Image (cartoon, rainbow, N blue to C red):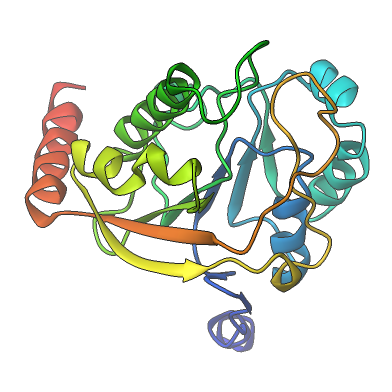
Length: 235
């Protein structure tokens, strides 16, 4: 009885929008410093799954600063997955039967293309396609009550041309809240560049970086719930 009582009274730890009682999926991690920051603040990473697009070998080549964070995450009980494509993550063999309170994608980027700048429409479309697939995949991975998708992104030109709210709406999401992102609120976090050029360096966040919090419209929550029940019945 005493052991059960201690478990019930276990303190929930917070860091900004996130707490140790939430089931959190982090995707597109650079050197895993953001995941490590959360797990450190919680005192445990057992409520978290942290993922990267790259294999462990390629991650070490691109973001060599990741090694210490991966060791820390493992020691804190966080599940780390490599080679997770955000377009297909809902079908991933480890993730497909999990549900999350929050899915986090910080500073998404489709990569750098030689000869293109961030102002080029073709590159902007690549970024938008990345996020379309992410929203579509994430919608079926949330808990039915209160599930959120968080995308942290610069909202000044040309990044505001990505039209996050429009992309989210295409998959049934509405913007619940938009909160200014302050890097200093996440001790030890280092944002990393996408692509292959200076990939372990940080990039300027400017003064217009925000965390966009999306939730599903009620009709979409009901649709997903029905699909889950149908799937369970068939299986």
